[in-house]
Image (cartoon, rainbow, N blue to C red; front, side, top):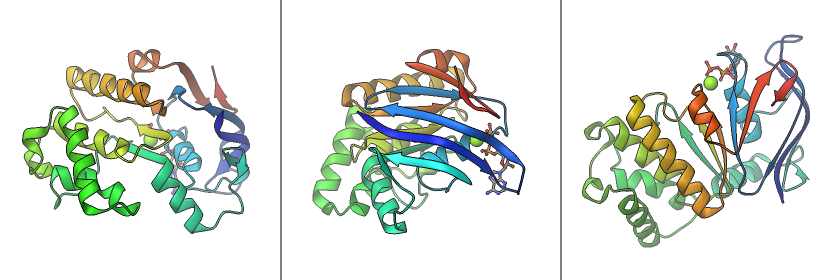
Length: 220
Ligand SMILES: Nc1ncnc2c1ncn2[C@@H]1O[C@H](COP(=O)(O)OP(=O)(O)OP(=O)(O)O)[C@@H](O)[C@H]1O
Ligand SMILES: [Mg+2]
């Protein structure tokens, strides 16, 4: 099944200054895709377009073969909350919440009860080896631990797709490769699609498909 489709998508932040033009892309359920490209070529912008956070200047974004162009902001928000998970280079954990509370956030926002959210978050953090750090605040965690909390937060609500934008860029090489394997294994086990933006060739090769973003779209 095609989860996400981009058809003839072009984007410019200023008139005539195209980042990319005529981009076509298709993401199947459970598929893992790496996206590479030079700094500033528009990878984060493209992820934002895929996630409905940015509307492309031209072209169409389809979610489960339905055009998203006529969606209300509320429909976009609901789709993002239920069907998508995000991991970023700078983790973006909420500093005043504990590890457990950070992972509960997507569930609570999606309308889950406090007790069900606590249980699901505790269980996933335990699977990730963080059962002894549930009550720690992000500042008290190592970089690798913070990224494991962020991975748990991206997955806890069982989304259809994870968007990971250089998720290991802030970690040392060994910790980065552990975090990445963990993300890939978790997505495989759950049949979750994964779109990974990375500057690492090794990381890109560990994905099912490797694409490069150019001015003319995504190329193999
Ligand atoms: N909201 C915005 N308004 C105007 N220009 C923007 C905006 N967001 C990004 N840009 C510009 O668009 C270009 C692409 O940015 P983007 O962040 O998508 O690149 P990237 O490929 O993710 O780069 P990096 O590898 O450094 O993260 C850059 O030149 C950036 O300055
Ligand atoms: Mg970027």
